[in-house]
Length: 195
Image (spheres, rainbow, N blue to C red):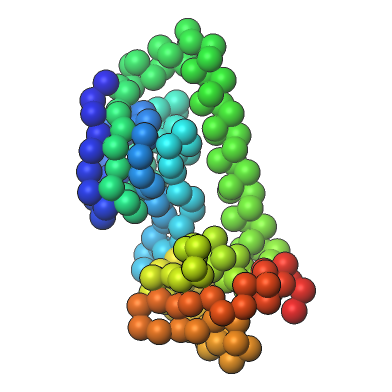
């Protein structure tokens, strides 16, 4: 095993890169996203301790290279299990295999939610869900409109327009570099497509 320790902002993998091994995080979060040729980005999922990155899993089990980008969203600690050790553990260690397959199944649930959000949920509900998920305990978010566009699989201008509307409804208050949730129950109602 190789120890992994890196600061927030570290690029862990990019499209076309070979996988160095299976990462087991003990601390921190990795944001995994895709960027189109036109520059639009969509956040696929985040990986934390005890979770599996489907990009890495596909690389290790199917010999692929990465097709997305992984960035340390917070400082990371953990270890990297070499490819050969990962494959051996998947073959011989029932507990390890069960842990990994359970985590992969859970991650597919995240993908199903992403598809549902993008294809079947109105944008305001999708935006409200992201705001509620990313806000701290006081309802604050330090996030740009560009980052919210990536989180909601949309464009920056559309996010800005919808935030102005949520602000007009006194659900949120926007400021440079972030926003404050003013009416959590109201935003929850929007997130459930009830407004």
